[in-house]
Length: 276
Image 1 (spheres, one colour):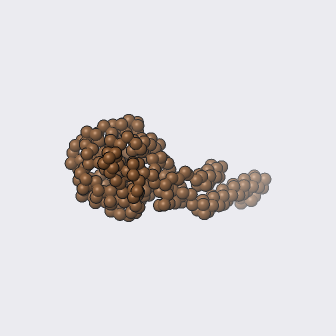
Image 2 (cartoon, one colour):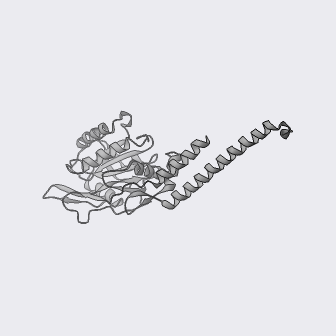
Image 3 (cartoon, one colour):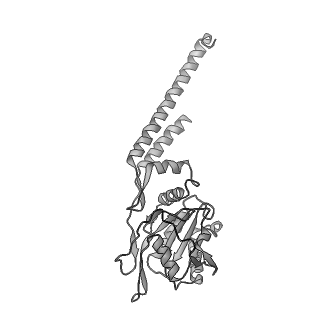
């Protein structure tokens, strides 16, 4: 047990000191001027907004909130550029999280193109679930389409600025996901199309108010802090050193206590009168 604790402390320290790659927000589309995320941490989503789901049912945004944190991605479903790569990478990363989609968190993909239909949404959803590779998560990822008014209201609420280019019939928009609390408040932004599994997991754990995750996640949250400028979790070196020092002291204390017990038993055997 003592050896495990000592080794565990070393492993945790090495994990904390390992810096993850970071990337700024990127945009997809022909004209990038003014296209970006404006972070609105703690902003409340307008949960009364109405959309259509992939089954052509009228739904309210609030229907998906109340129990679990949610990952929100804003894309347009007929995109032939980076949107398919973003959704594919997101699905692949989620399959590595060891968190149960549909049970511990949900995903909402909302189209920013009012011309997208529930039929297109259903087809795109099938593709994403095939990439995810787990039929048990079928109810956890929802694709929504809607009218321009609802789309713009949602995008504005999360600071998602996009632009339509009529000449190219294309949208310029930022790339990334928004992590939302079960109450529908903005908790974190993660930028790009390649989402580190560590960042997604920590963001979901924080958004859930630590109702999901493990002790290891709490250790990692002590070692890493969210950097809003980069939309990534970066190593907090000072906390990592403190944790390493504490772990080392505990390991040393355990070692000294073990040596004392061995010595005490040896002397007790050599001189039975010591126990009287």
